[in-house]
Each structure stands twice: as C-alpha cells, then as structure tokens.
Image 1 (spheres, one colour):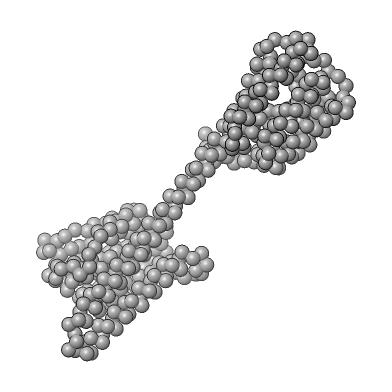
Image 2: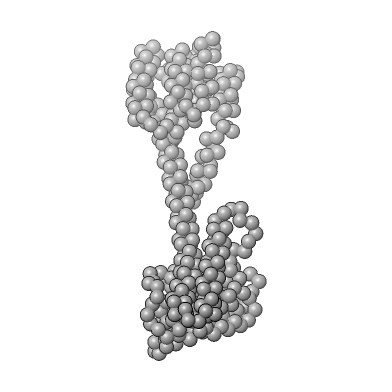
Length: 384
C-alpha cells in the first residue's frame, strides 16, 4: 500500500519543472508533426481544416502556458482554454488540446484562493463554447458535451485530491516537528530539574549549617567554601547543558561520566549527609543513555535524602554489568524529617519515565524503618 509520503514524493516529482516545461515544448512540436496533425481532441464534430497562422496561435496558447501552470495556474487555464476554444471552433483538432485537463489539474492542485469562483467562471465559459460548436457543427447530442465537461471536472478533482494529500502530509510533518520539539523541551526541563534541584538543595543545606558555625571560624570557612564549590559546579553543569543546545558545541561529552558519581557523593557529604558509596564492575565502553540515567538516579536520590532525611546515613551502590547498570540508593530514616526545600514530586516520576523508555526497571518505596530505597536496573548500550 502506498502511503501519503510516497504519494507526495511521486506527485511532487510530477509537479516539478523537470517535466512540465519539456511537456509544453513536446505538445507544441508534436502538434505540427504529420502523424499527429488533426488527430487531437474533437468536440462538436467540426470537419478538420488545414493549419494556418491561427492554428499556430491556437497550439501556442494551449501548450506553452503549461510552463507556468504552477506559479500562475489561473492564467495558465485561461490561456489554454482560449487556445482550446480557437482550436475547436476552427476545426484544427490539435494534439495540444491535451493541455486543457493538465491545466485544470494544476488549478485544482495549486490554487489557494477563489477556487469556487474559478470553477464557476470556467463552467460559465464552457456553455457558450458548447452552444457555438453545436450550431456550427453537424449537430451532436447534448450527452457528448456533458460527458466532456464531466471529464474536465474529473481532471479538476484529481488536482484537488492531490492538493488535499499535500496538505495532509504538510500537517503530518508539522505535527511530527511539534512533537519532537515538545519531547526535546521535556528532556531539557528534566535535565534542568535534576541539575538545579540537586545543587540548590545542597547549597541551602550548607548555608543553613553555616548559620550555626559563627563560633568556629575554621568550620564556617569550610562550609562557605562548600557553598561556593557547589555553586560553581551548578554553573558548570548548566553551561554543559546549554552547550548541548548549541549545534557548534564541539566534541564535548554528552553525558556525565560515571567517574563523576564520586564527586557527586563528596558534594552531598559536604552538605552534611553521611553517604557510603560503593561502585562495582567496569563501566561498558558504550553504555549509551544508561550512563546518564544512572547518574541522574543517584543525583535525584541524594537530593531527596538531603531534603527529606537530612543527616540520615545514606548508601549508594552502583554495579556495572556486561548488559546492564544497576543502582541502589537508600536511607535508614534516622535523620531529620523536616524538609528544607519543598519538592514538586516530579523528580522520581521523571526518572521512572526515563528508565521505562530504555526498557529498564524502576522502584522507589519507603522502608519499615522509615527510610527510603530506590532501585534501578538499566540495560547498557541503550540508544541516546
């Protein structure tokens, strides 16, 4: 079955200048060849007459305007119809008469405005032509003129059908482009959520702790240094994300390396969260998006630990297998339950969607001791 894109490709090629300019020249030339002369359309039954100067004008009016049928379809139809009327009334019956249905298809296909008015004008012009041919000719039945009109209307209908196909394909492409833009906006929003939430939460926790260290200048200096380092890291991560939006960002890595997990853990520790970190196995050479998602899972889980279980012992375990990456982050629930920063609840939901897209498993649930455990399994080598 031929789909709309294939129809658009086929008809698009037929509507290009590659063929209808040579067609105009071909019809003009063929009309004067001995084998084709007076063997064209015959409407009304007038006897054929030898070609003269008016025959050349009739052929030119019918054939040559096809070269501009796409840019000026109405003008093309008017000229072709005038040449066709002269052709039939004078009895030349040239092969160039084939241009009339082609011009009608062009109008049906490319005319964007005043379509009904053009159809009405064409129909009105056809009536006196049929009457004149009936009076000057041997007298043909009305059915012949009606049948010929219906054939011309069919040519218009074919052009209108192609126009609707083209419009449907344009709309489909517009929807695909819009969906792609929306998906990219969602991805960027998630990246910004992960980066900003984690770093800002760490900075708030560190700043809150600094308020109680005024009597210990050394520890106060360490705390403020941690706030500064976290802010710089946030700027660096945001710059990295913005670089990805720039097509000329170069060869910078698209995903945070797993080695940055240790830096992430150290940053959380400086914010006052005791974290035990374990990394097993060797990262695969081509982990694809699994590496980025694993990093985001740890980042989001540590952010939630700072916000909702500040001071609780937290464990982070990352295992690199041949075919998958598994991540486990848990807290024991013994720390403060007062959240320093309100949450929207979108973080874990967004991570679940990412993991599902990559064909992995995601679970996040509270524990009996009041803690919280996040488990994730992500197939390695998942496409970005």
